Image (cartoon, rainbow, N blue to C red; front, side):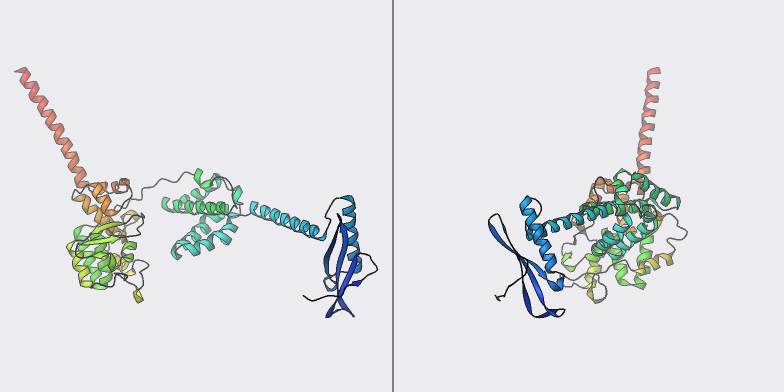
Length: 410
């Protein structure tokens, strides 16, 4: 360690040393230090350089303050205690500033500065962009400038009403409320919001978004033929959904390691319901996959450019649907034909053939039977048959009663 030469000052208890090279003004820079007794112990505490603002007068004043505190037994009695006290005071001030900032943090500020950046990191681009759009159009005008702590169910009812008055579907209102719920949950995890999530006290608008439209066998054949003329890949994906009930995302994620041509099985993993399942191939699916040629286990069955995973349904499917006129003059979204209609059609065909709903639920990978029961209304023929059976029993009972009365009269 370097040895310093300490020089005395006219003030007892204050000394300094000079910097070897650096100057402060015309003199060499000076470093001041205090020396004093406290509790029978000698203390030596550094102050700082003249270039940092320290002077003999300031050093003397600081020494006098410490000695007076020692004499009175109160306040900081050393430079370390004084620094610790100042540090604690600064931390307390920062905590108070943070508390006040958190209390006045608006929903709009939190969304822009915290929620949306996290959503961009965690969610697909299409999802976070929809989040941003719904918040900007519907939530921000009502609660954007309101502190998190001040948002009430009344505010959210206004969001609902504004969306309903503008003709937005109940599904869109559900989604917007879900975004607001996520915002408050995220703020609560960061200790920026306390209390119950206000969305929990808001009644969701009722809706029946069950898709009603499914394809007849003739329509399915027409669709597959038209798709085949545009893209064999898109045709094969539609065929897979029609014959095995796969979602688009499940088709995109399917690898050759999931394909068992020998047993005619497809391993469907990481599904929307979080439960793996097995899909059963029809002979057409076996032939289609065989013709595509088996790839390496890790390779996707259907790929985007460069062998990468497909991200969304091809525009070819939509263009073909439009060209066939399947959606002409259709205003109800539940009646429109989309790619998911193929999976919906698969379930509907099964129900039409009288397949037990429990079996359909297993094939579809539904978490609950309630999800499968939505397809029961899509088999009007079987519902009519059930009513006809009831009607026949009523007629039989009535006929038997008439015969019984006649026999008693005889």
